[in-house]
Image (cartoon, rainbow, N blue to C red; front, top):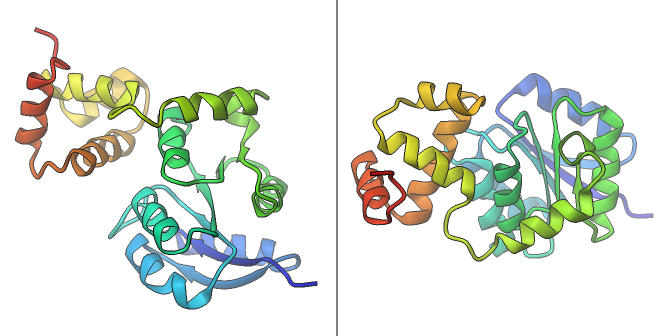
Amino acid sequence: MKRTRIILADDHILILDAIKKMLEPEFEVVGTFADGLALLQGAQKLDPDVVVLDVHMPQMNGLNAGQRLKQLMPKIKLVYLTMSLDQDLAAEAFRLGASGYLLKSSAASELVQAIRETSRGRSYVTPLMTKGMVGSFIQNIKRKKNTELTLRQKEVLQLLAEGRSMKEVAFMLNVTPRTIAFHKYTMMEHLRLRTSAELIQFAVKSSIMAV
């Protein structure tokens, strides 16, 4: 029986090595990459069935890399393995083509389960985020597909537009500064804005900024 072909992408080499060793008894790990751009450039030659990738990666973040991979290779399954508990990030991942989303704090066996499920055409979200409400969570994600910005993105944008630093916003929303930075630059790319000033101008014009 043909084994599922897996590509791994994470900027932490030790994590890559550990995941590879864990998956190899059941799956065929055909490649590993340390940044999103390298993943995008190398994946087509390796013809994977599933890509396990982090959201936060250098050169190109995992969401953008995953979205472009799905455009180039529509049949591949994307499984995000990340530290972030942010449901808006998970929603954005699914909106852009993800089949699975789980946490690095999840049990090792959960990644194997996620790969099995997504390989069969199903969606998988870690119970650590959904508390057993996977179906409801997926439906909420699908309903968000037509919105320009998520509620969390609007919340982040309003606070940034009020002149707060990313560290201050992170503290107020109880997330990491890295997550706030990710939201900011995802919004800028989505809205095709080049500078922080343009993002603030958008917030004012869109009445996102409270006055």
